Image (cartoon, rainbow, N blue to C red):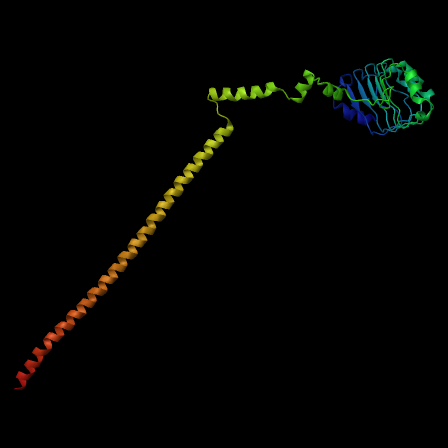
Length: 274
């Protein structure tokens, strides 16, 4: 238990701690919890294995005490050092009779007591006797004297439509925050302030424009190259066709010349023969 207490303190001073949770730390008695914890208002010792409350410290401001699921059968008189107790949970312990509960009479501010799953709850007229023994008590085992189930204060407030300013500030659900957010945004626009998101978007648009221009230039180059190739191909084909035509024309001229020279050659031959 001592190590758990040191861990829960988190380097804070003992007299600065108002809430201490020592659930499941395993110990049969109170060890390490001293009178130094003068500001403590809530203490939880659930399922620790306590068999006695001997050595319970003087906690003058303690209001809520969780002792459920231990092995306590008596010794509630050791709690008298915490006179401001308003809530005590002793469910799941070993309390056998109502006699063991008499020390609770000292707590004039006690309003909530839980004894569920204790043998004492099987006593005749158990509830009536406990409410008679503890006049300040409002709820026993989760029900009031008329067997009406207890509801949390938060639920009552919601049902009645009551909300405190503290609740609004803690939850952060205030209309003022939304109005301030809109006003701040408008002020930024009026002052010419630009958010990081806007700068990022502007940069992104510039990059896209540059990318489009580069692609456009590449497309022009590609179109130009395709046209040049087509023109060159056409020019080459034309040159080949012209050369072929000239060659054919030359052959035709040679053939004509040969035909014209043949009669003259024959005449000369005849004359030479005669």
